[in-house]
Length: 335
Image (cartoon, rainbow, N blue to C red; front, side, top):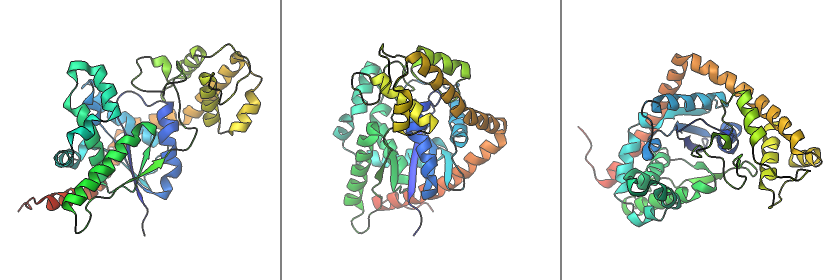
């Protein structure tokens, strides 16, 4: 029996930050040898919000290069660009036609983002959970790495697959129902400006996050100015001190130490002593990633070959699934 298949991806909207790395990509890297992995840059999702067409392609290649720089191994993983595989768009349309509208209107992220876009809210924002379902179902993924904010989308994916199989795959299920691959505890990184909110690319303040490609000077400045409290002695798990918990967690993850080791080391520290330690640790942890990223970007031919090979492997699986879906729906086979 072969390895189970994992599918995941990140949008090319802005630079990847420590939350993306510690909450997702590092876990992909650590567990990649156990699975048959398909990691895509989900550029079709990127245009559900206003975007800059002049930088979309550049940002897409940046994310792909960062996947490699963070340790994605091509021996067990494939990297490709979502829009390079046309089956994603075609399966989305087919699944749209069996997905009830009220399922999409009930999605929490749509409700939150629609408020921000107001009268300019686009159909893509409503529909992108179906595109996400198509992304996953095309590859008959066994596992999908998810955080708390994506659980509802995976549940919708399972609902769509079950509905399709019930209506059109009664003799033999066509689509596999994926299971969640839950991230390890402690990998949830919060904003540097508000310890109660998740670190996010969509936050308008650059000071809220440490990007993987930030310079040492930028990292030092962001940590120096990050929100703290006036209490001396740093502790985990104090509901009244979310910033203390967040920054200690960040240090723990970047330094590769246990929670108990960090708690003991920092229990008598003031912020003036801890912040330089965190900055030094972050700079050291990101240095090899930044060096590998630069090497990949300097060899454009290599990066293009990686994405070409990834697309070909992705297309072989995606097109087979798409053909099976179309056959179940009753479409004719092209002559």
